Length: 462
Image (cartoon, rainbow, N blue to C red):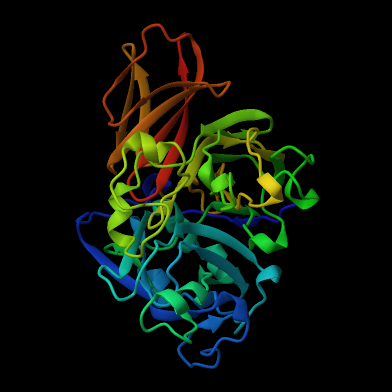
């Protein structure tokens, strides 16, 4: 059973909502990691920099953590971006990396990852990079406005110190042979991480409910989604896994944040096969998607080492869509499922990838999920509690059209039936004509820039 973090109360302002008059273009940068050196992941805890006095806790050669200070947290505004920069050293292959938030007991100087609750807030894939060629650094950017009220919540910060983890597993063995200057070296990447946030600061929040549900693990532990390990599936032979979480009271503004990516580089592996993914909450379909970009060409510039993914010449969109689940040099999408009002009690979220094969019992789908909502009611100060930063996307059905707006740039919009059938897809936010579409409940996936996908439910018809 999943533990929950209860963060109750609200801002004492008119209507229970804090509105700050500010220039939306004014931002400030909060640097958390600055060129942190990562080493061969198989050295595990034998990190050459383990005793370096720079404020970083090095759990291993591939997982670093440092506490966010009150000064840093107090500077956060309503708008929040996460910017990650990975510089090439002596690993020239595509690797998985991720940024996590760890909830550590107050005042602790260290912690064990298995003993604290952790949230994955951003995942990415490194390109094939030759450190001697430009560009030798790749940027990853995420809009994470929905995390702002969590980082600013007074109850959460009273109970926990918030640590930001930078995880990046790499190995130097191919580069030791293939890249000039890498012979005998164990350093694989350098990592820089910063928050970019609106000014002035927005102040502390109250009234949030945060429930960590599942956090991805390294592949060798066997707990990520697949169809051949008992810990990784509900039924051997089927790629389906259910996770349970308790909501302690009725809430409003509920949302689920989901991150998945398909891995398995063996012949016919899951990295190279796009599959339908279906997500259910309490047995009701809430999200359907096929991972992958329209094209990986925008990221070719970062793949400076010859490799079998990009080849020697540009490929068409159709060629990319025939095999790529993700692009080396790109983020993995953060998928946000808006649930609205959610009742008190136990709930179940199920992920199903029915066509996944996992040839030779290799590969997996790392899954990370958490639930965030606002408590539904009045706090002790008599203020109505509400979510501090609602969705930037608005979806409305009117006059025979589906219309979508967003403060962020929209890359594409998809519409699905409640059975998971794809109805249409557009590459802009132009209105979608609904003539001929049957009455019923539909799911709308809105793909935004910077690795965010929002899913909204709409009703068409009387």
